[in-house]
Amino acid sequence: MLYGSGMRLMEAVRLRVKDMDFARSEILVRDGKGMKDRVTLLPARLAQPLKRHLDCVKALHERDLAEGFGEVYLPFALARKYPNAAKEWGWQYVFPAPGRSVDPRSGVKRRHHMDEKRVQRAFKAAVRETGIVKPATPHTLRHCFATHLLESGQDIRTVQELLGHADVKTTMIYTHVLNRGGLGVLSPLDRP
Image 1: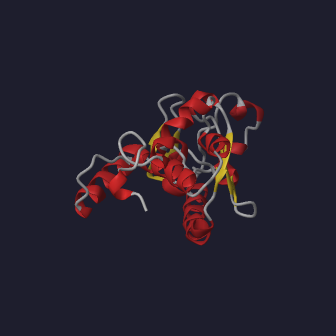
Image 2 (image 1 turned 30 degrees about the vertical axis):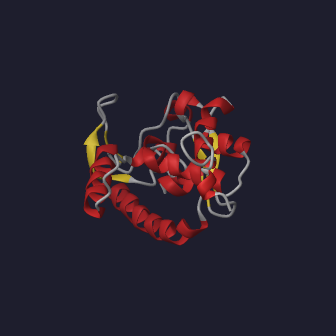
Image 3 (image 1 turned 30 degrees about the horizontal axis):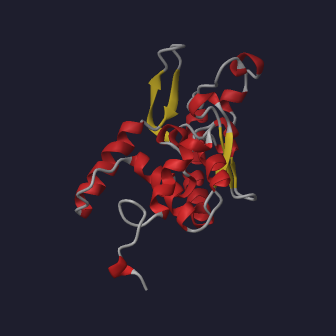
């Protein structure tokens, strides 16, 4: 999901069901870095696995509701404006925590989103298991997303929008891969 959409780890774990649009193959990233919203890709290859995952999440949510819970944290004043929204399916996290916990802000027991540290630990273990020696974190997948889009000929402005960069200069760091060699120069020995 991180590689296929270019989302940051926290954007992914905070993703709400209502912000995934399978018909348009889009994800609405809310309150990304800089408190900005943006649209990014929902990879077609992930559509069916995500739908199956959401079936399990919905069953968990229905079980929480039946047990008198099922409420999630709502940002800003939305909880006051829409008092029942916190229990609605659309507001639930796509990647919920395995258990309920007491929200320190409100004292309410609810299911939060998955802890990002779980993903980081699993990623670290996977990198070690595969024998990759270069440093890699979940954020590396975001870099790969941008790099591979540029390598495949995507416009840098499109990549900038997908990543949510305010300035194209930030996105320009990924263009180094389009060059060859340390200085972007081919050795005469390597010329066709």
